[in-house]
Length: 225
Image (tube, rainbow, N blue to C red; front, top):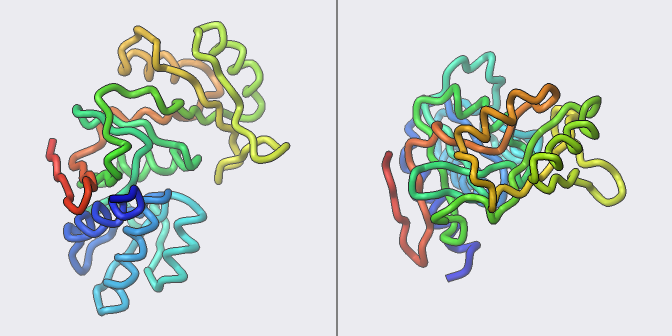
């Protein structure tokens, strides 16, 4: 079965965890798109929900589908957040940020009681790092951070959109780094990166995930922490 169908399978399984009256977090990306579509249909059928979006793109889609989008400050706490991942390993650790929404995604995950990750089978890996790790940086410091990451052997590349610097919804830059051959433990790497002034957030999600749903052919494989 195609990756698109596997994404739909995972999304439709995940929305079963949503109940009327909940305040939910809506992720960003190609897999999250199918989840948001499914929730839009649930709302049109009478389910009452409030939702916090992890990106401007997600907010536009959710609003178009009739989902009541509120701010995180208004929500205070989320019952469930459903989001995708670029890679997920057997220990519920993730790389996220291919779509550039990693900062808001991590904030929303931190403020959620239940975090569900949905993905097609190609995202399920035994080791993180074939997908480049996104790092969100303050533009004032991006060039110096790039040089420092290069000195750490992480092969940094500033993300571009055409000929312009890629900008996140918070108007920050993204640097993609190669962690595949690093011998540093992921927890240590996360800590080391966060000590560099100007790095706002990394795409390592190491502790937030409670449930992973993988679309595998026509089946949804559910893994609980």
